[in-house]
Every structure is written in structure tokens, then in C-alpha cells.
Image (tube, rainbow, N blue to C red; front, side, top):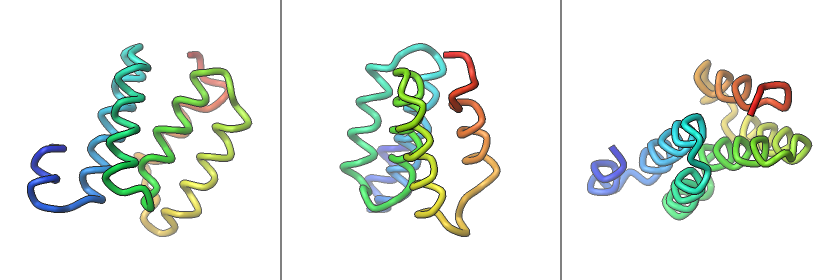
Length: 100
């Protein structure tokens, strides 16, 4: 998906795919791979909210709940009406109260 989005020139889609892959890597206990996907997402479309969700999830898993909450809040504001149920599920999964 990331490569296809890159070939199409859709930077937002590329960032979305990279962030989603990073979130799944984080779920699977691979924070280093998740960090790599964060770099890819930020390089692809830094002005989108997708990298912020992944960065917030990483912060949460690194024991920085206040930073995670702020990043999730920034992502929600940036996404505006594009904020989805799936985005809300990521917040719930990586909230400070969820087990890491």
C-alpha cells in the first residue's frame, strides 16, 4: 500500500498507510519498526494528522501519557471532519490507561 501510494503520488495516502503499519508494529511489540514508519509518514506528509497519531501512540508506549494526550489532541484538531471511528479506536487503544 505504501509503495502504491508513493507511485500514485498521493502523499497523504502514503502517510496514512505508513502510520497504520507503524501502529500495527507497535501493537506487535516492535517499537523500532514503528519508529521507522513514523519517519516515513512524516517524510511523506508532515502536514497531515496521520503521523501525529503514530507519534502519540509511541509516546504512550514510552510512558509519556501527557505528551501522548497532547499529540492525540493535535491530531484530532488537524483532522477536523476527517477524524474517523478508526482514529478514535487508535486513541482508545493507546491511551494512558491501556496496558503497554
